[in-house]
Image 1 (cartoon, rainbow over the protein chains, first blue to last red):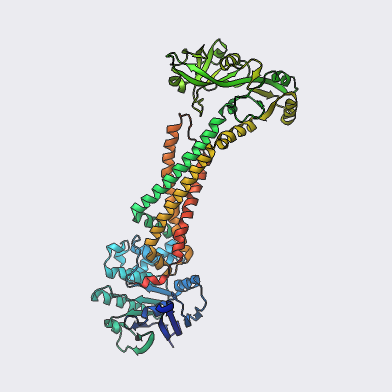
Image 2: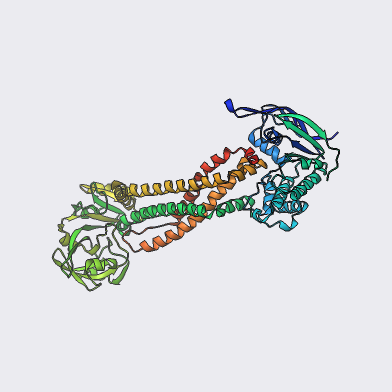
Length: 234
Length: 377
């Protein structure tokens, strides 16, 4: 049986308060598994990003439980959630969120620096991660010197460099052309093929389905369908 | 270079205008504080300069004397009673007082006369750069500081003028004996000073007492007090403290200087806090990203405090250069700004403290970051 890295059990999440209150998630159960690339799809406002935030230990559920490698996040403080993210989750954002004042190596190294990793080892690992995403020749480049696709690859390198088990990507190809989008998905697929990691991608883009092992459809805060993808990774 | 330091440094230099504004705020604040505190130290030194250079273990002063420049008088005969006490090596009267100086051109200006017996160790001019101390014992001889030559309408040693319509002749010129009141000091023999200030031979302003090295100061002080009338007996330290206290706090000058320094600290803190806060606010998404990738709050605080400390070190360095120039420019003035090593160290620590305090607003701002904002599109 494939190990669940992060698992949500009957998770509900209410956002806001008063008349503006919204129930973003309504009793969702979902596991992110090793060796799997799962797509989380659905229309805008369906709760995809909220679910990603809850699974990624950025938000705590209103009810239900999130398990991270067998540990419940119930009652965890902000610092404890940060540690869970640090140790278990890597994020890739739609708009990359690279630090404009740092070069590619330092942007990647940052994920290790927050873990307290020593400089020399951190630089070596950052360079390895950049090489793995095909940016060996851009290590000293600053974000403004990189194309959108290259910036997203730096962001992926930052997500994987800490040797975390779960990679969560929020619309990673939305700001890219189709060619760069494919390249990014290929990298994410190869990360999932590692079998020690799982990847969960939030997307609107049906063109990404061929890269997925599983597709989860969300609507109005509920999972309406889960599909195993029989098409092999591209 | 540690990544926190690099990130902090780059954050600062990325927005150069804001960084310059921060540094200017720190420089303005620290220069203002330094000038105020340097003036305080200079003032403190100036008001006690005569006491510092007098040869006295004990001062017999008229009861209620507030400072060296106090014109009260005591009976000169006290000196004879004091000399008779075992352990007293010498008791020398001095007189001080304002007098009118008439220049060769006929113009007049007030001067501060200091009269002491030239043959005994009393209060004699020091730092003589021209002429001779011994010549002060010759008739009508005086010594003045060279910085006052123009003010007194004279050209140097050998020049003549009048004090209280009596001729005086400059036989010695000193360097650096300046009065914070800007009234020139004029040194002369005791008897001549009495004549120029209208003090009778039965009176003196102070009696300076020298004790034998092996004597007990407290015991002798009690005996001297018993032997004198309408007088107090002070050690040099006590007289110094009393003079400082009068001029610095009795007149409000010290409070004004401290008030100016406090204002500088407040202005500097507000400017640095404002710029750090706005810089942090502009980079909230970066700090949220740090939080999202799992950094602890402490890591983010370190980045902000590092920014504050870098600003502090750069701002202090620029301020120190300006302060050094100010010290040089005021060295020869009536009220020089004095910056000691202790003051420099204290100001550096104050700069660090001011900048760290300024970082609090930015830290509070960052504390409220919700990492989920990284998903905002």
